[in-house]
Amino acid sequence: MKIGLISDTHSAGSGQDLPQEVFQALTGVEMILHCGDLECIGVLDSLENIAPVVAVRGYEDPIEHGDRLANTTRVVSIESINIGMVHDIQWPTPSIYTSRDGTSLELPSVGVRDLVRKKFGQDVDIVAFGDTHEELVCYCDGLIFINPGSPTYPGRRHTPGSLGTLGILDIANGSVDIRIINLQDLNNLKYN
Image 1 (cartoon, rainbow, N blue to C red):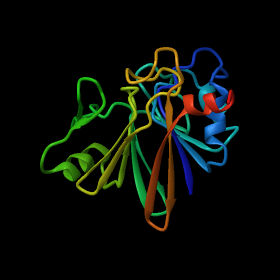
Image 2 (cartoon, rainbow, N blue to C red):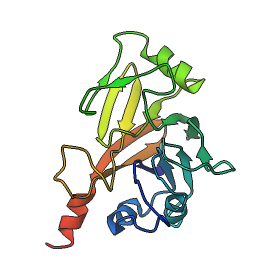
Image 3 (cartoon, rainbow, N blue to C red):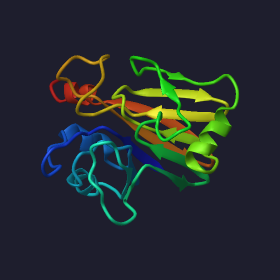
Image 4 (cartoon, rainbow, N blue to C red):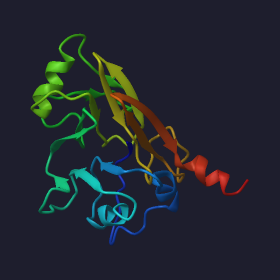
């Protein structure tokens, strides 16, 4: 199953202002996971034109009744892979801290699985989060941690004013392939 992973879209108004590169990069996915800071429900509506969306709230997000937008954390199971979703990996407790620049995680040397189990209330295989706007993939204690970055307001490693990133997870037969898509690369292809 091909899953789109996105976070920190920070869309004002109707949610129709996402760059076309977002839709281009997500073409063909079967589900989209949004890790919060969408700012308006219209973002989820726009993304649902591509595939079903499951999301968690960020700090500035509205509340929506129903199953599409969870309040703080949630676990999504896809082909026996459990994906724990949260906007800010530091909250709720127990906290997992990011480096000051958001480009790495400060994980304890032991007990990572226990810490993650407490955060999500069950075992997970992947922790998907946002908040820092910095794309990140790291592995620890058999877990995968992924932050897809922000497609619209990328972190400091990107040129100011450029497009950012999102993630693609390919899940098949119990294995996971992860790609970070730099939307600026897609934008550059249009002009070559």
